[in-house]
Image (cartoon, helix red, strand yellow):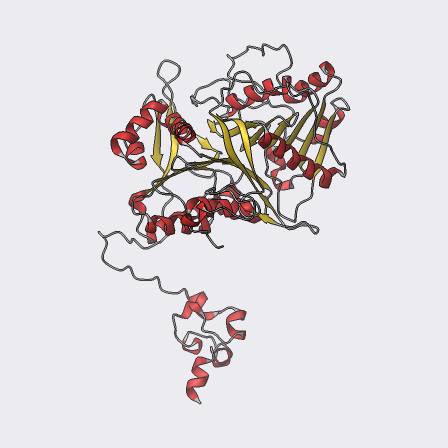
Amino acid sequence: MLITPPGRLRRAHPDGSAPGSLLRPGRNVWRATRAGRAAVLSDGATYFGALRQAMLNARRTIHVAGWDIDSRMRLVGDLPAGQAPADGLPDTLGAFLSALTDLNPDLTIRLLLWDYSVLYAIERELLPVLSLRWNTPPRVELCLDAETPFGASHHQKVVVVDDKVAFCGGLDLTIRRWDTQRHDPDDPRRVDPAGKPYPPFHDVQAVVDGEAAATLGALFRTRWLRAAGESLTPTETDASHDPWPASTAPDVTDIRTGIARTRPEHRLQTPRREVEALYLDSIATAERHVYLENQFLTCSRIARAMIRRMRQKPGLEVVMVAPKTHHTWLEHRTMLAGRIRFMNLFRRARLTDRVRLLYPHVTGSQSSGAGSEREVMVHAKVMVVDDRLMRVGSSNIANRSMGLDTECDLMFEARDEPQRAAIARMRDRLIGEHLGLSPEDVASRLAQTGSLIAAVDRGGADGHDLLPVKDGRRAVRDFSPASSARPTRAAPSRRARRWPTTSAILTRRRHPAVRGRCCSASRSPSPSRARWRCCGRRRRSRR
């Protein structure tokens, strides 16, 4: 994919994008809009508390699109254990939505849930149709969305309230997502509906209003039309109506906001790869720092784009925060190996001194427990480029998110110094959460060292830290200057020498396992097999 040189981004584009803006509709975003107010909500307790307030303020519509929706999850903020919500309504999602429609006869709630694969059935609510359709009032509508190609999923996580306030990010309304920014390993509130504790969990959601929220409402209506066959009209309410959650202070105001999607080709639907284009274009403008939080790091195109930019900018540093490892059998066999290949690209480019792959680690206080230690599960999808661009969404840095699954990301683009300061403050707040520091402490470290890596390497406080991920290299050469000896390649196995692939024979090419020798020179149980297995180069040399 062609990457627009940063110098050309200052000219106005015929697609309607603003002069000097990275956001280009039709290329790397679906729509370039403005958010009157925007805030970044870190972790489930913050998001669920704000979402509950916004839903309580809803008058006409609440639209929810998710990878997973579980009626048993507790939609509450950072409440003490055993304390009920102050609004007096139920704390579980299904009962709460039902209570909202009972209180407001004009309110309609629509839930758009991916009609998931059986591979995920063990970790989801059994028969969600029964709990979210039959056990709720008629004005709580559920649609199972199966409009995806084989093997794909609907991975967008969007909630829109009255087309005036919208949430977008990595958090689904499901179980095992709630946690506070402290990530206390001994927190008794962090349990699933069966009462089973689960590890600390980190994720990020963004909230916007104004034109950006209305655009996300249009995104939901488009998907609802394809899945349910029902055409919805935009929600109209009084201009004075403001469902913005009172407990959430805006991090930035009047900021240019891009909405990027991934949409696979399916049933005459035009594919969209704006998510991938936005990753590549934003990396191509990086000058000093790229800060990432992501569950999966496996897309080699993104790694090569960062390597290319790091070679162009010798002072550019990359800090990536990810899970320590992948625990499920499927993720361990696929995503962990992909992350090793992802990091090997930086090793081969000899750029590891300017790259860090870290995971959050927390230690419980001696007063609250026995000082237990836990890794924090990172599910966030965040990218901050310098202090100009901040991205929050649903996309992982994985091939699925670039072209197979449906995704939705928000990109905030700073246009003046107050907005740049706001993006830097949001980035420092995320880093400070992992290090047990305030945003001001993180900013002070950056000012003293001039290096994001140096600021992180100085360690954390209050039982929080970012530690190096040690995935291993899987027999990859050591390209460090200390190792000058070139390692020898492992000898090909006897099985590989004896049985070359059929495609290698039919295409008359040398089989890679025989290291350049004619196939007839390898061990063979009979001369006839050796003749059939000859690569062709030997035949031409005999003529």
